[in-house]
Length: 83
Image (tube, rainbow, N blue to C red; front, side, top):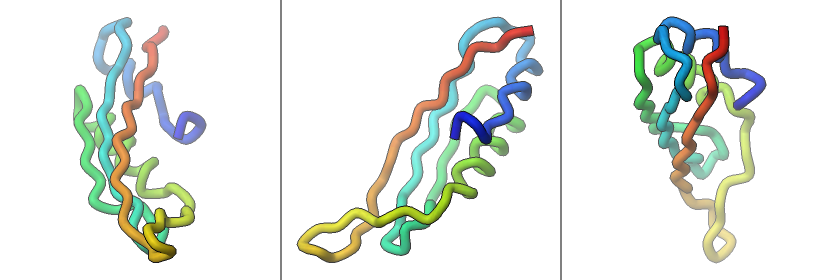
């Protein structure tokens, strides 16, 4: 996620603070991300986070009693804005 996220979008905030983005998503029984929810300071950052999470590679799904299950993740994204 860190290598794929375009942090330059944070410059539009005119702030040198830490940018905080909250992402919650589910890795489905097929190993792909879905039900992605993003909260960010602006629409551009929300769209970038959605794009990056949507393009995650297929993962091994969680299992209970050897059966694949959906697993929900909370992923906080934080980065410092520099000029």
